[in-house]
Length: 51
Image 1 (cartoon, rainbow, N blue to C red):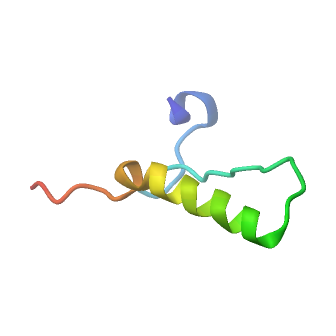
Image 2: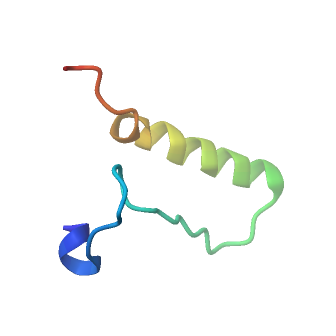
């Protein structure tokens, strides 16, 4: 899908990704949100060990 909209990246892997948090929160809350996003996305970004 990415390449149909933006063309080839010129490198392998996933396209760049930006996650924007719009609500101002303290450092602890921000770290919790970042950790939750990492935890929820880990299976998609971990890659595969199957050959």
